Image (cartoon, rainbow, N blue to C red; front, side, top):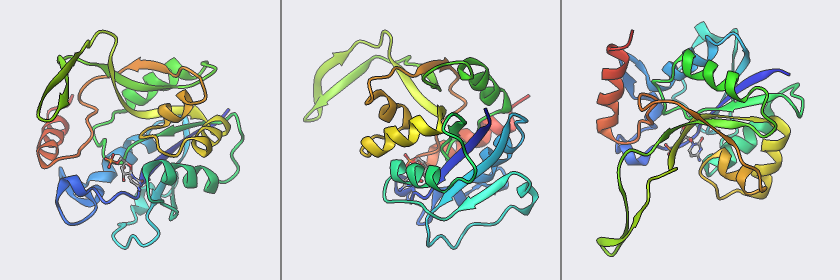
Length: 223
Ligand code: C5P
């Protein structure tokens, strides 16, 4: 079975408020998206890395230095799930039981170790799985600006990416559940239980301006 990576990068990143897609904002001197692409291209077990762009994206810098593994698909959709589904359809020469690791372009601090842990833990699993971290804070559900309920944090995890599923299963799951915010959600809707693989908080998603500073600090202080 082969392993591929698929990076949906067709979002506008409006919560960043930068006026342009966040994946192209500078992070440690490089476009944000390049960090995760370099990591995924560096994992020997991953044969090809696909990036899904919006069809009208004119800002893609190219990254010729990664061209041995990197393939660009200009088939992004209106939602993340649609971008992933379109990307899965556009991948060439893929078999149903090949693995696909879907990773957010915005998780720039992903390491080769994170990816190899996921592949090791999930590679023999019948369903697939994802990186995640146990919730540390006490959670409150809001009702009109006040606490409506306290949600017990026991057994709660925050989902990260990559999320690793077989091409056939994930395509089927996303065709049936388009309103999900991650791949695991679509697979769960089929009645299956993806495996949780413990990661750490450095694999954060850059969503708000402060996250850029945190990501920069993590990259600078690693090793
Ligand atoms: O907006 P959010 O941070 O949740 O997006 C997660 C990932 O999904 C990002 O890499 C973003 O570019 C991608 N995305 C996409 N197509 C969309 C919306 C988001 O590929 N329509």
